[in-house]
Every structure is written in structure tokens, then in C-alpha cells.
View 1 (tube, rainbow, N blue to C red):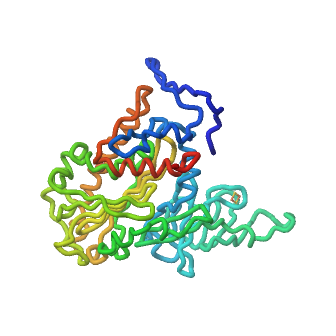
View 2 (cartoon, rainbow, N blue to C red):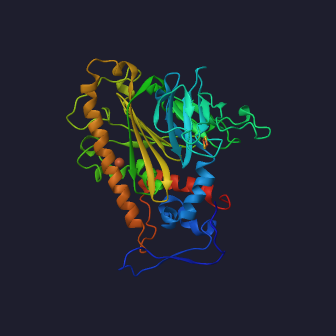
Length: 408
Ligand code: FES
Ligand SMILES: [Fe+2]
């Protein structure tokens, strides 16, 4: 999965289109630390990642191998598999994954690849007694065990169904957020999350319920979207007619929080709900909060899971890499259990969904525009504003993992 280039050679990237005249050189070895010295400097002296980090298929393959195959990746809220037999299939960093709750009550994750000849076993989501591969009907239990192989296996020497269950994938949860990890040697999820449970303790994430989930197909590199999620300054421009109306960075301070593990986080002092547009009314404050501590805490679990906990609800935005220039974006709206139980919930929740839809569309558009702009042969790394501290940290977190040698 690494770049197959000759050291010292230069590959010339020629943009599509008959009018293109400029050419942008990519270095032969994209992973030499010396290429990134400008990103490594203190933020006041630093520049952003070079454009090939967002457009090179080889760089993307390295990210899959060194980041997404190694860390804990968000896979879904636990409410999606609330009952025995509930399941969903999802690609996580291009790996087909199946999550199911079996009769013993345990939620397991599997490779969603048939052990016969590799077909996807399950698609979509639902409730099932087991899974039948659509190709030749090998049949798996909710526990992943192969229960029948109706392909006349009698003459296949030594074949035993018990050896051909779906491959298990590690799955752990915190606060109703389920994560999977493809690396059998990785440390537990708790190590990855660091002090996230303390930062979000007062929002009682275990008591939040998934009210709505939406997926988007966005034509941009995954890093553009992740950086955007922790870029505070675009609120005043991209969201000038939506959330900037009440949560302008000029009016309310945002503090970068102390974090451990693979998390960056901010706290915004606006005391109302950050999940509504100006003038909308909503649900009361969460019981676990009080006026003195009200505000919005918004951590990003690297590499791509943003969780925003505000005064009356929470929402998450998860960035899943599909290709170097494409992401699957998942947005979920979470409300306290007692809020969901209100008879007026559907009517009261409508303005929240309208706000989520509006701001997501604004972010989707600007990230796609950024990808188009940065794909130009004229693109070169710009300087950071010092308020882009978390963008700088995110870019360096990525370099820490993908470059050939660790930082000296
Ligand atoms: S590939 Fe699944 S039964 Fe043949
Ligand atoms: Fe935004």
C-alpha cells in the first residue's frame, strides 16, 4: 500500500482539462520528513500541508495503512443495534464491516466478507435471525458462526463449518459510541479516547439517544473536512447567515481544552443551545447541566469523529475516507432519553434538524470548493493564522503517523 516511486524521481501531475498549462511537481518520496519541516514549526512560523497530501493516491493509501488500519474508528451509535437481531453494514475506511447484536445480547463486529468466495454478506440495516450470503447462500448466525454451507462441501477435504465463521473485528464502546479497530495489537479504546470521558461527563452521553442519522457523499479529501470541524474562524463567513447569528466567535470565547489520547477539543461559552438557529425555541437544558457550566463542548476524536455536546442535545459528524477525493459523511442527532419521550418531540425537534441540515450543507460546499481549489497545479501551502491552532495540531498528528520516521 505504500508509494511505488523511485527515490529522487519526480512525478509530474498534470491536471485534467485542455486549458491547463501549469505543472505541479510531486516529490518522488512523499514520506520524507524533510519535506514537512514547514508544517512542523511552531504555528506562528508554520505553513499548511503541501497539496499532494490532499490529492495524491499514494499519500491516501499510506493514511489508510498507517492511520485507519491502526486506530479505533467510529462505526455507529449503539442504538442502531438496540435489540437482538439488529444489524447494520457499513464500510469503515473501505473495509466492509457488519455489526450485529446476537441472541446472547452481545454486540459484535465482523468482516462483512463471505468466507466462501468473498461476496458481501449483508447490506443496509435491519433485524435478522442470521445472514445468508447472496452468492451461494452460505449462512451465518448473528454470532458470526457459519451454520450451513449449501455448496456440496462433502468432497472438500477437512472442511468444517466451525473454521469458517465471519472474521471478528474488535469492537468497544464509550458513551453509546461504538468503535472498531482492525489492529489486534492496538491498545484499548480507553487509551485512544484519553480524557474524553471526563470532558463530556456532564452531558451523560450514555443517556443520549440517536434521533436521526443522515449520510452525505462529499467530493473532498477527508482531511479538509476534519480540519473544518475544528476551524472556528469559518463560522463568521461560511455560517454567516446561520449559526454565526448567535454564536459568533467575536461575541463568545472558545477555549482549547486540555486533552489526552487522540482528541482535540474546544469549549464555547455561548450559554444557549448551539443546535438551534437564532429565534428558534427548543427543549429545556439537560438535567445534568446548570447555568454556571452551560456551553458547548466539541471534541474531535481523531482521525475523524466530531462530537458536539450543547445545552439541550448533542450531535456528531463522522468523516469516513472513501477515496483520495471523496468521503462518506455521517451526521447523527442525539437527545436525552427523557426529551425523546416527550409527546411533542417530533414538532419540537424540527428546528434542530433544519439547523443541522443547513450548516452541514454549508460545510459540505466549502470543503468541496477547497478540494477543487487545492487540486490546482498553482496550489501551494498557505500560512496558518494562530487561531488555527487545532488545524495545525491535526495536520501534525497525521504526519506523526504517516512519515517514514518519527519526529526527532
Ligand atoms: S461467496 Fe458467499 S456463498 Fe459463495
Ligand atoms: Fe462549519
